Length: 193
Image (cartoon, rainbow, N blue to C red):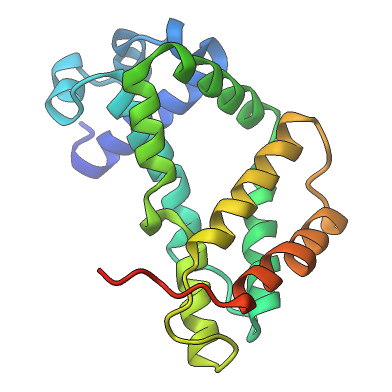
């Protein structure tokens, strides 16, 4: 019998699979439960509905990248390595999943709120760790805000993804050298908490 973390991971994986296969509107909690070999009660005990479940699945997907972003010894190298890792997971299924969610969020306010919460979650950005490392190395001031660079990178990757353009080395190098490094080194201090 599967319990705890394994059960949760199975539910989140089933959610992502079904989103890619049938889209948000057609995905049901019943289908997720069947795919994950879990009960609907188990799912509803943890998440109040589809929007929260989708957010949790996306959070889980992104958390793997953030856990330990590459440390190459330089800000530029760290940015390139983190972006390469992030773009490596973007396949046709991911594109279908994300384009479907973008469309669905225009029709479903609760989903839109959940996806905004996902995107705005700084703990899911490798940029925060990368900027802190760069500050420790003396490449950036200690109060550099990583959020503008994260938002620009995310926007550019999404744009390329939606337009069917390659997320290749040329794109990533241009993104880092012409947008992210100038943005970070211009120095936008973090807002006090």
